[in-house]
Length: 262
Image 1 (cartoon, rainbow, N blue to C red):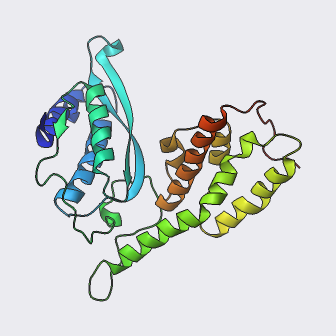
Image 2: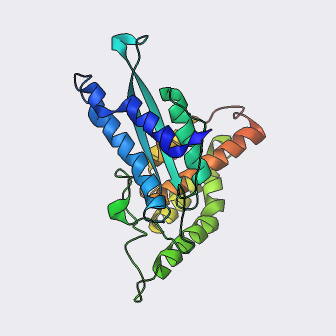
Image 3: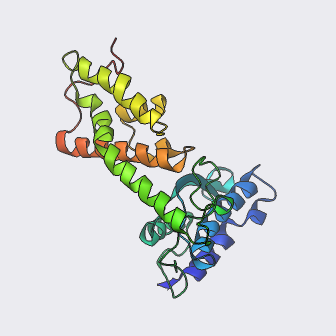
């Protein structure tokens, strides 16, 4: 098991943008963006002693590979943070991408690699690597004394709001298992009352994203991509409930064809 800094050095050496100066077009820039996204998260906990915002970014690395067409292969991956002490999740994601790229993935956290203040709030928007995640900024506001009290309060409010709305998220996830036409009234209520109510409360539940979950999408990285952090967590909760229904009931005996009954 090697130190994280050594594992990261191997990764950088393998995907360094300069390796792709002669192409493919955009490969160097893509690798540079992906490395910066990872390093910004690591810097936030080592230098700034703060936890990264909840968010997700879909990234990829171009890797030289003599056995691949044109000598290059692409390694797509998602990099996600929860807004709390997510070192285990970050470690798992880093190990996965390192293994796929072909560098040493069995690393350890050493002293100083992940140090977060007990009162740490979210990373300020200017430091947030999730450039495609719009909206809520949890790190910009502090109390009059310069403390992180506002940060803590906002984070607590978000967690409480997610818990309060969880039953509604579960009802949305259940739609594919509601038989038609007997359950059309229930589906109409979900579409005409529950989803609009959640929208008024600030949850951006995009119709297309929700329908993708109903039709079997279980990649929360995909449905969260591009959303503000709070709405992304709401979509993640719906995916979580859909997975639970999958485990409990399997695929619906008859797939629902009309998710928007008149």
